[in-house]
Image (cartoon, rainbow, N blue to C red; front, side):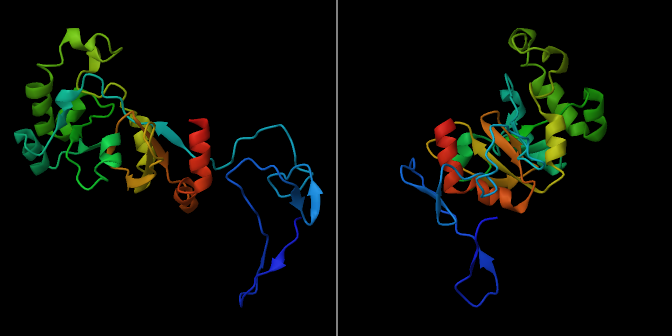
Length: 231
């Protein structure tokens, strides 16, 4: 095991000092005052291996929803249907978050909302919220024509849904209150903590906050360096 030293303070603990460099290291690699070729993940020289193993509690993530040909499912506060669905507290009416909301607006306001029926049938939607069903029949169905939906595989038979709704993944995600989103394309690595009840576009990577340290890890300079290097 690596050498530890007493903490230079009143706490009765020992610490192991680890030094990182954001640049490619050209100097000597030192472990316990000895020069070594490399340092393994368990801070020894005996653990070096080329094999990779899946972490027991690795970071769980997925690409957000793809709303191809789904502009009619999106509403803003100025739309009369926005008020109607809000008043009945439709369980399918949720804030719709894009990269621009994070990069430009800082999520100060959620101006765009989406009717996300997940993977439910039209009959199930009607049973749970008749007003949402009415919106789909009056606003969405007339504009989501066969010609428009044909390029989107499978959407013609379920025109009331998002094209790639990710419903099973959202159900797993919503076991927690919060999650983390990061834009796939942005000038900066924008790591943002958001409610799991929202719907995210396919331009966002949605990450489950499986433990308290995940958010801190993704905010670290090491992760930013890795993200910029790997793209």
